[in-house]
Length: 428
Length: 159
Image (cartoon, rainbow over all chains, first blue to last red; front, side):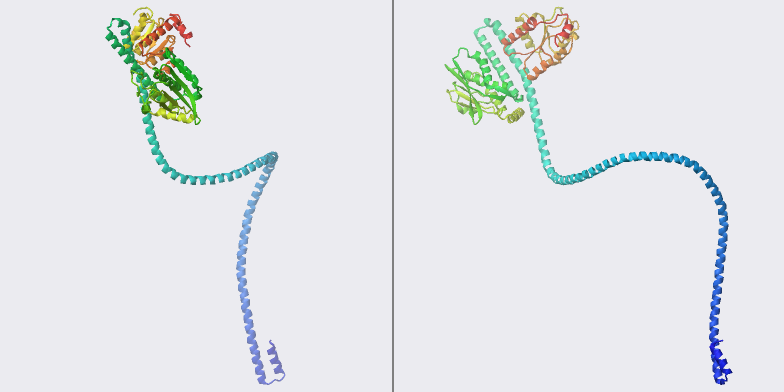
């Protein structure tokens, strides 16, 4: 009973008017309807709770079933577990055997570890060494990198140079081809010349010897029986043959000069001159002759060739002073700007200087054969020898006033001399 | 062929040279026992006692060979080479008698064992003197091993 209800009842009992009473009852009814709403709410709430309970219950039943299932499973597991337990026991038993073995292994392992320890210190050394090496390597690497950079720069430069070089090498290649062709031509003509002079040497002299030989036999063995004319003709045959022989020999020695290299040695020119003079002595018998030989240097030269120079010049001097009642032949040396100049001077018939350029040509003669014999090869040979030595020769003469031949050997420049000699040797 | 010993084998192809050489040798009374071979092949047959000279014997060698260089078939250098390479013939003196005095002929000649090298002089008088001197030296002055002791001479004589 609400407070309104109770108030109304109390009011009625205390003699309250019916209007008040009606209002009181209306209040009570109002209160009741309010209460009724509250009860209904509560009833709803209870119903909700009950519903919740029933849901909960079904969940719980599910859980219960699941739990029962689990328990069943556990049961099954339990038997498995027992089996496993047994198995584990067995294993443990085995393990104890194993354990003994393991202990052995452990001891061995410990020993090994000890060894490893010893090894370890060694390894440390090795480590240090390796570290050092690695350090070195890293230094080396830096250096290599520098080198690589430098190389790359160089390659760059090369590339630039190469394109230039390619242009040049094209030209060069062409020149080389030309040089090769020229060289081959020169070698071919040299070979031909050699074959020619070898053949001349063997074959050309032979018929000359035969002419000489048979005409001499005729003269010696039948000369007395021949009329004077026939004897004279025989003599002319012999002279011709002798001259032919001389020409062949002179030409051969001139040709040989071209192919022959210089054999350089220090030679005393005084000694060479003395040798030549003593060889010429037989030709001077009965003549009034004065040799004047001054101090001559010792020079680097081919002694046998320079001796040929003196042989030619001195025998020429002898020849062209033949008409002099008293011949004077002088050999000396003077200094010309540091270069020794050797000279051979005579007081012979001399020659006109306007023919001087013909003097050194092969077969060129300034005198008639009846006056002075000769082949015209001697001075050509002399000039060839002197040129081979890198020197030069020049005359000074006047008709009927003697002649002087000056020459240098250029021996102070040995290398140049050799080059020139080689070049001279290449000329056909 | 007589069994008389040949003193000189002249190896020369040119008939003029043969005639002049024989003339010079006759003058020196050396021409009695000369055999002339006109080419290298014949010279080798004579020296090695075969071919046309198979009736010859190694015990009867010539005492001197005068050898020209330019020869038909087998040249003088080849004859010299084979002669000096064989123990049976290497003791026989060989004088190269030729027209040339080419340096390479001299070098090769002596290199192969020639005993002497002479250039035939153009002047016949000189040639005659040369032949005389060569004959005198090799046949009279020079001592050769006993005639039938060639093999012995070869092993002791010229090495």
